[in-house]
Image (cartoon, rainbow, N blue to C red; front, side):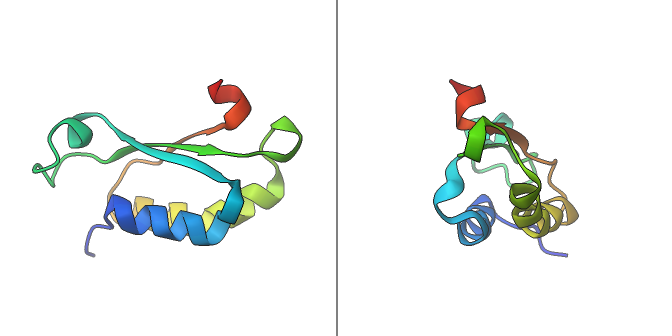
Length: 86
């Protein structure tokens, strides 16, 4: 299976979450050395959570994009709400 790019992942998350997607950050060796495509694509996903916490509806929307991201060989994203990030 072809590896999903971080741009593809961002687009899928944006489509699934709409305005609840606050930020998707790439960090680690792939962020420092983008030319190294084999590097792990470590991501941090920050979402706007209703009531300050993640809920079942949010996880339902995240399931498909995250499952495809992991299936393409990437580690699962770290996930936080915007309140947790602050």
